[in-house]
Length: 229
Length: 229
Image 1 (cartoon, rainbow over the protein chains, first blue to last red):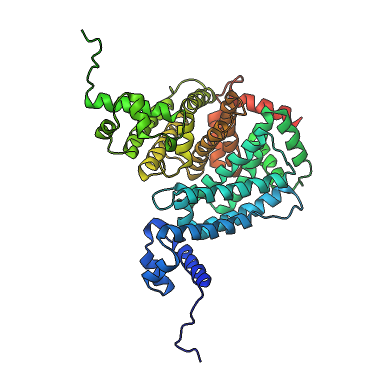
Image 2 (spheres, rainbow over the protein chains, first blue to last red):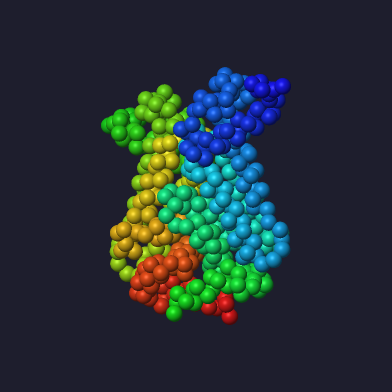
């Protein structure tokens, strides 16, 4: 009989529970505003016991961020099948799912600040950016990217981050619109770069030639033609 | 006769001198790697005297950043005369001048980290972003921006930052190309937004109708047509 008897958790299980509780609280309020007391209370354990598993709030925060980073990087994984525009759009949907789920925690992290701007957290953010960068190059089937392609991909990743942050601040634009728009932004930034550089032009033409007429890239061209007329 | 006698500086004058010395050192190496000893030595005073004017490295760093922020915000000022594309291009040139002059200090600041990611420095960065945002809206002659325009302007500002950071990392693309490209990126992001939203379409048409055929926006259209053919 185990009624009334709380099963004793192992160390790793307890750590994972605390990380989960912390992420849940950070999805409602900024990590700066969440105390160890609240985390302890939500996990149903004492404050000193939290410190037994994590020496301080920063170490718990970093562990939570590590799990969230792995989660996000995992959402970038997309089979190398079918048109590129549709693949990128599916990734954008999963990215906005993540942003939506983590809300205040994501904002606080990306905006930096006392509790969240440590060297370790910045390195984690960079590792997620790098995972996104590597994924995109692999989908474009480019192994040794020229400087201009690296610029387009990395600066677009930063654009996706800022777009998500601005969306979180009031959610005044439907996220589905922004998901499609970011796919279009990628094509637009690549087109601007290609308009300045022949190598980028060749690459863009190769990438776009297999896009279907009902995919997001063709959709953009149709919309731009309608806009210009 | 003042030979051999160093004139004694007033408090404010000495503070300004130390800020200037610090900014000069931060333009060569990251603030994290510059010690108070080096700043004292470059200013020709003792280390304790530096602490007399600034209680710690962070306060000197924040004072230096305040001056640099005012400098940068000042470079966004552009007369409301002539075509918009040419105005934005002039501002982009001055922005890259600033980035070029401050190199490692700019990188360290924008990437965050132990010495540079304080609440005060983040607030200063946000104030510069806000100054850029206000300037652009004023040039577009928009007082009460719809959410989609705010998104385009703010996310483009973030794109300009990341483009400058990527450029600083190796300077593998001529900056003049990136200055023009960022003007084109602005038009491209606005066009994508306009392709999704009628209000943005109306705004973009109003803004572009007075652009001359030899300006950067017409240049972009000509380049894209050449690319597509």
